[in-house]
Length: 128
Image 1 (cartoon, rainbow, N blue to C red):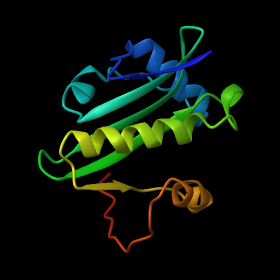
Image 2 (cartoon, rainbow, N blue to C red):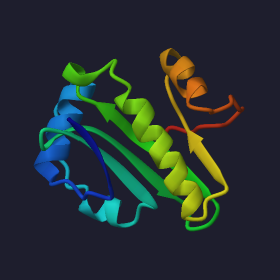
Image 3 (cartoon, rainbow, N blue to C red):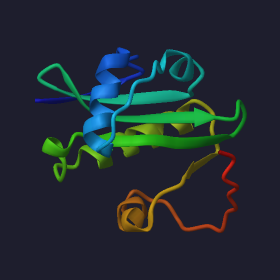
Image 4 (cartoon, rainbow, N blue to C red):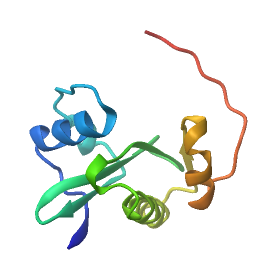
């Protein structure tokens, strides 16, 4: 059974294992400091195992940002990401954000539109 948890603070090894599987590249990072400053984060657990994650970062004011939306490849196409994004949207609203931003690759445009996001123009500078 799938369970969505709000602000679960997963262990670094859990998150790194999920990100490595979801993104196809090794991850080795401690996210504790990042998550402690986030507006919210959602973990999707199947039989106690972290299989999905989304982070809601924020500017300390009215703007929140979806980051790291991830679902383990074995668990995709089951609506997990949609459920996490919808819960993250509700939490951001409840916690005082007026705007929720997300950046994504063109192949994900349909998914984010289905979650209620509208396209906008934005700018980006690569710093590293």
